[in-house]
Length: 591
Ligand SMILES: Cc1ncc(C[n+]2csc(CCOP(=O)(O)OP(=O)(O)O)c2C)c(N)n1
Ligand SMILES: [Mg+2]
Image (cartoon, rainbow, N blue to C red; front, side):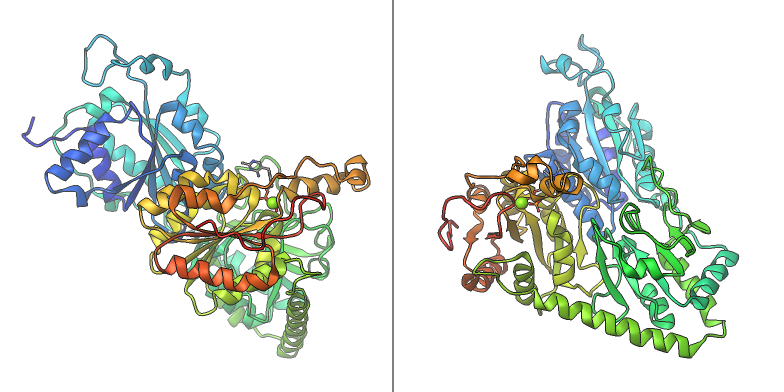
C-alpha cells in the first residue's frame, strides 16, 4: 500500500479521463461511495482537474441524453454513472437512442455488494443491498449495448475501461455497459497506468478498388443517378466529399430519415428530405443507379420504392443492419466502409473516366430547376393560415431568428421532422443533431450535453409538446441552470400527440376513430409547459398563439439565452386532435 489514496474507483476515473471523457453525467446511490470518495480525495489532493467533471443529473434519462449529445457533437466518448438495476432501468429509452444514434457512451452502474458479514470494505450494511440484488442486471442492457462486463478486480479495471471505450468508439459506434460491486470499487490498489494510445478505435474502412470502380462506373454511366443518405453527416468531414461527387456528376441527393446535415440544403443538387412517406417519390422511381450511403431507412417500400431495374449500391458503416431484425435493399453490391473514405475513392475513380459532359450539364440544369421549384413551393407555405401559426411559418421564423448565429439545432419535432428539415434548410455540416432513435425525450438532456460540448454556439431545440414532457423537463432545466448551459427550446405545441393519430389514419383512414376524431391523443386541459422550465431552472417562459407576436417573443427568448438564461417558448399550432379547447392568452410570459 502506498500513502496515496488509490482504489479501483480512482483507477476507473483516471481511465475515463485518459480516454478523453470530459464529463460524467451521474445519478448516484448506495453503490457509489468508492467513486464519491475517490473524487473527493482527488479534490483534496488538488488533482480534481485530472479527472472528468461530474454533472449531477436528477434523472437518468437526462444524464444519458446529455452524454449522447455531447458525444455526438464532440465526437469524443462520454460517461454516465447510474444506480444499480434501478438507475439502469431509469435510463429508459435513452439507451435505445444511444444505440440507434451510434454514439460512444460508457454507462457504469454499481452492483449489489457480494459480502454480508463485514468481510470486505463495501460489504452489505444497508437494507437496500438485498433488494437491489437482482438476477441479471447486465441483461437489462444487453439488447442495446455493444459490450457489457463486470469489473471483478481493480488490477485490470483500466484495461476494461479502455477496452469498453475502444469498442464503443469503433464504427458502428455505440454504448457499452460496465458494472462494479461495491467491494471491488473500494479495493485499494497501487497506482497504475496503461497506454491509452494502444486502445485507439478501429481505423475507417475503405472500399476495395474493384467496388469503388464499379460504383463510379454505374453512377457515371447512368441517365438518372441518385444518392440517398441518412446519417453520413455524423462525420461532418464526409459532407464535402459527397458534395464533390454530386457536383462532379450532377447527381441529385435525397436525405432519408435524416437527423444530420448530410448535404448542404442550398446546394442545387439537394432534392429534399423524406421521413414517413405516403407517396412515391418520382426521383426514386426514375433513378437507374442509386448509391445508398449511410442510410438506415432509404425508403419505405410499401409506398415509395426504386425501380426494379435500378442498379443499387449500399455503402454503409453497417450495411447489414445487424441491430434490425428485418432489413433489405436489393443491392448489386453492399460494402462496409467509411462514407468519407469511400466517397473519396468513388470520386477519384469517376475523375479517371471519360464523362459525357453534355448529359451531365443537361442533368445539372434539370436538377437545379427542380431544386429551385421545390424551394419556391416551400417558401409559399411560410405564412400563418387564418390567423393560426403553422409549423412551416414557425420554422421560417426560427430560421430568420437564427440568421447570423452560429446555431446548433436539436430536432425532436416528431410529426414536424419534415417541416423542420424543409424550412430550416441547414447548410453547415454539424449544425443539426437528432437522437437517431425512437425514444422521445432526448432533447432535454441533449440540449445540456450539446451546449457543454459547444459553449460558443447557440443551441436550439425544436420539439413536440409530448416530447417536451417525455424529456423530464424538471430535471433537464435544473441541470441546465446549475451547470450554466442556457439554450432555447421551441415547442411545436399542438396540445397532443399527433403522431399516433397519423399512424391510425395510415392504417384506418376511414374508420370509427377517423370519423369521430377519437384518437386519445389530446392534451386538454393544457399544461403550462414553459412554466415547468421556469419553475425548475428559472427559464424565460412564454406561450404564443398570435402570429403577430411570434417573431418578437422568439427574439426576447434568444436575448434571454444570450444573457445566460434558458428559454422555452411554446407555440400554439393547429390542434393534434379536436378543434375546441379553452382560449389561451396570446403571450403568457411566466418567466
Ligand atoms: C418514450 C416514447 N414513448 C412513446 C412513443 C410513441 N410516440 C411516438 S410519437 C408520439 C407523440 C409525440 O408527441 P409530440 O411530441 O407532441 O409530437 P406530435 O406527434 O404532436 O408531432 C408518441 C407518444 C415514443 N416514440 N417514445
Ligand atoms: Mg404534439
